[in-house]
Image (cartoon, rainbow, N blue to C red; front, side, top):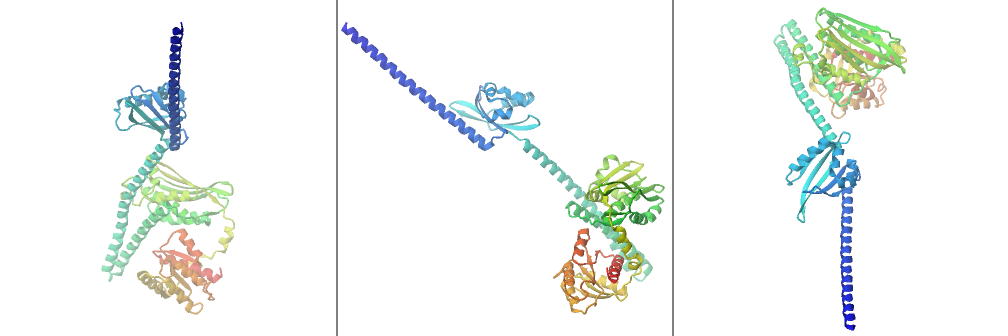
Length: 565
């Protein structure tokens, strides 16, 4: 009996020991599993942190790992839910739920391409999703413990796609403009060389006929006409350059709309009617004649339209110019300026084209009708600078209507200023240089020689200074009132013209504030004229110098000085 008890006790002991041992082994196994799971969770958490650091917490990227053979999800980043608009739990159960988010068509296309992939390199696929968004998926394959895994990185490229689109559009535009400018430069080469060749040819003919004054005079007159045309081409090119660089400024002053209309009529009446074209200029419904605007630029716009109309309107046709006050809004007059013609008209598809710099309606336009193709583009940009707009209405074979709509401020007190202005005859046609003592500052020997010869022939007594400093020295070292008029080139060594003018005004001599000073400069823009006036100059004449214009300007300036204004 005792033996049985002992044997039974031993059996129970071994069973208990086995149970304890197995329990210890189980606990250790579970602990190892828990540790491994903790490590996995830590790894996942670390991965999420790394993923968030790289792509941020924005809903713009997703990272998914699947077992390559079964497509079973192994890892899905937290951002995937927000990216696709599908819960992470649903994605873990069924990845095809992505198809609902991106669209069945994109999903099927992706699946087909993915199945064709052999696992080498990186597989890329881009697709549309959401509301007009675009994304790209990049996939790489790796092997771990004998199994293949595919890692998918999906990220939003909507912004980059838009930027690339804008860059492509900008590039296409730049290439188009470059091609247009190359074509333009080729055309300008012809346009500039043709009158230049004419000028040189006429000068040569005048030289050969020096003993025949009548013929020589005819050749020189034609050379002068060609020079004027060449200058107009250069001015158009420079104006376009100023506008495109944003450096053109407006010089708004009071002007009389009725006088402006009369000026336009006088400028074109003979030319247009001489072609057998009926020409009419009218003003309608104006409550006052005085407005504020840049009259020179406004003249440039209107004369361009009329010149264009005259070019394309045959004999027997008509051109009408209308100035009309439409309404008054907020203290400004709403003005319409319309130029109508019965010429050849413009094809609808070419209306926008003619308003672009460096372009004409057709390649044959310049050849058949002349011109640079810059005039209308200049008009459009000048009117925009004035805050207005141009409307073009045209029909092939029936004519064209250019309408300019502007909002111009009324000019208060302009009528009184007009009454005080010197009479034109007083300062214009009757002025002569007889006995006028002129200090001329010009560093270019040829320009100085031409100016001195012409001014001396007209009765002036000219003293020549070779730079700005020498001009100041001549003036300050001579007695008071030694010079009636000082002509200063702007670009000179030592002191430029504006610096010289300031030095003369600040010299302290008795006539320093009253002596007449006029700029002679190739700087021909409104802002250049403003700078000259700010430097203390009384007038500004652009180069190439029109000596009739210089005489008129000198007469006006000296007349004002004489009147004490």
